[in-house]
Length: 280
Image 1 (cartoon, helix red, strand yellow):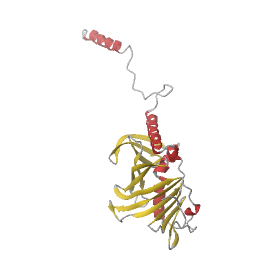
Image 2 (cartoon, one colour):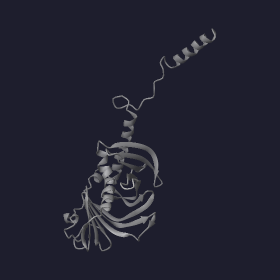
Image 3 (cartoon, rainbow, N blue to C red):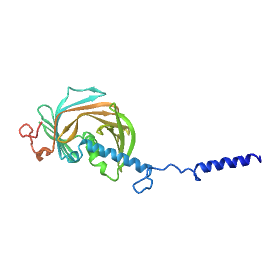
Image 4 (cartoon, rainbow, N blue to C red):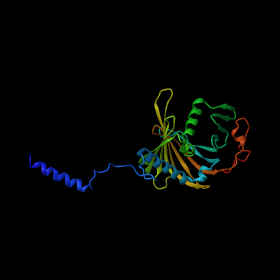
C-alpha cells in the first residue's frame, strides 16, 4: 500500500501538468458580440428568426411585404379522403389586405363569397345571406393561420416564440422546420426549402369544440413563379388529418391593382360581368 500511494501521486501530477495546471472548462454556448455566452434557447430562436427572414427575402422581400391587393384566377378541386368530388370549379379571388376577400365561383361568376373582417356573406341569384357559422369559423381559422398572416404578422410579434426544429422532409424535399407559437399557445410549423428558402409546407392544429378531437391542417406549396417581384406558388394542396382535402391551380395572378370598394359590399349589386375587375 505504501508503494501504491507515491505512484498515484506521480499519475495525478502528470495529468495536472498536461492540462496546463487547471481543470478542463465546461462546454459553453456560442459567444455573443460582447464575448458573453448566448443561452441555447436564445441561439435557437435566433436561428429560427434568420430562417424566417430568408424565407421572406426569397418570396420577394419588400415586394412581398408591400402587397396591398392580390387578384387570382384559377380552378379549385374539393376532395374527400383523397378522391376528387368534382371536375373542378373556376374561381376568381380578390384579396385586400389585411382582411377583405371576394371569391367568385363558376364560369358565370354567379356565386360569390365575401369576407370583411370577421363577417361573411354568400351572394347568389337568390340574394344575400350570411355565411353559415361553421363555414365562417373554418374560413376565419384558415385566414388566421395563413402563410401571409404568419410571415407578415406573427414574425414581428414580440409575444410569438420562435423555435428551430432542425432538418426535415416536406413534399419529398429537404427542408428546415421552424415552429411559431403565439401567446394563446397556438402554433404553426413552417417547412422551408434548404436551397431556395421558399415555404414548402405549413401545418397547424386545432381542437374541435364539440368532440374535443385534435385536427391537423396542412398546405403544400409548389410551382413557384415570379410575378411582379413576388415568388408565387401557383399550385397549393390542402390536407385535413392526413387526407388530401383540396387543390388549387392558378391560371393568372397580379398584385397591387386597384380594387373597387363595391366588391367587398355584399349589398352593392356589384356585377363582375359588367365592370372590369382587373386582369385575369
